[in-house]
Image (tube, rainbow, N blue to C red):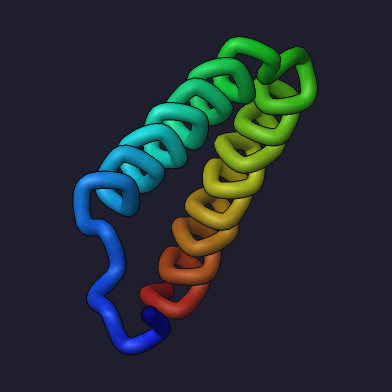
Length: 64
């Protein structure tokens, strides 16, 4: 009995159920993104702007 192949249909149905639960969890986690995600995005954009500004002034300083 132990050397028999596993039932493929039951394993496929379990995989599809687990994939559905994972996709539902990712959708619900995306819906629950609150203010924190926007704050981190704003910090990221601000940080990139500051780096770009510093790079501009540094290149201007080197050029003169």
